[in-house]
Length: 467
Ligand code: FES
Ligand SMILES: [Fe+2]
Image (cartoon, rainbow, N blue to C red; front, side):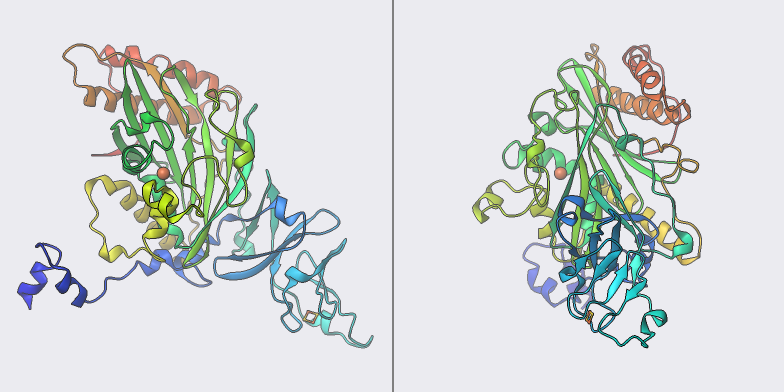
């Protein structure tokens, strides 16, 4: 038997033995999200997007979020609400209800609920009935931001302020909301955000060039963590006489930002900002939504590739982010959606063979486990907040520097130093006054090429994990 176990997965033609081995298991701590589960409780400590305003403004929307059946609506006073979907009377769905100035009325017998779940009326009952004083319908606090409806589904006494990310308040940047369904567990979709290696292959080398050919250049990649809350990677590519530094980040538990998609790399740019901000929100253990914002500005879309008219419900302007293409197209030119969904309803971590280049995935899982444990111990999980309502600086950006490779230089080492310089300057800019942070930061970034060529070492700012 021990011989057979030794052969499994290590010798050619071993599928017979693999098929008989005990099935490997998913990581239940991280993939289960229902009420009372470890990761479900973690998720519930954050504001989570649950619906698009453009849908909710038309009529109530049923939403399955974190394994719970909800209805999201806007009452006629303009307040957004997230209530349990099934009426507290006899369970009809409130998605068929009628919105009122005070809330929503169930279509079946007219029970009337306020946005906080208060039962306002039970009109089918006789006057002497006092049932409405005895019960309250399930409700969660809801707010609208930039076209998405967010709910807080955790313990009321632990409700955090809504984070004030700098990237969602930039002058000259238009945010276009979107929502994309994935019939698979949330974690395998979110993990893609810490997997820069896939960008080289999936997006440029294996099928068509899906974004720009520059994505196919092998980067020098490092991962790191800042302040115990931001996990990032920095991928630094050489494009002729220029060096392109792509800096992306994730925050626990399910927030991510990616830099502008169309950085051509053929013109200098300094701290060009976010292409998309996104939350990967579990519907249940085997489905999830990416809710997010595509960012549009003259700088981000200088090449004219983005198309805001394509952004919306199950619709995106970067190839491969949604389902619905033909089977042939999916096979000829698979995108992020295909690879993530094809990992199965729940990716089985026990069946993986993680490589060195998966260190971002490993770090993401480690951070999640740490945050899960904090909640289990009744400690506060990391929140991406400045002091009470202050702007939270985020780091996601593209920087392209003029930096020809000097003769007899090691380009891998040079690019590693450039990447670390960019990270150090961006992180140090946390301490700058918010109103002048970007300008001061850009001035610093403009000096990196000469400092690298002068042999200066990047300032220490955080721990790096390197390939
Ligand atoms: S089931 Fe909703 S009012 Fe009766
Ligand atoms: Fe991707």
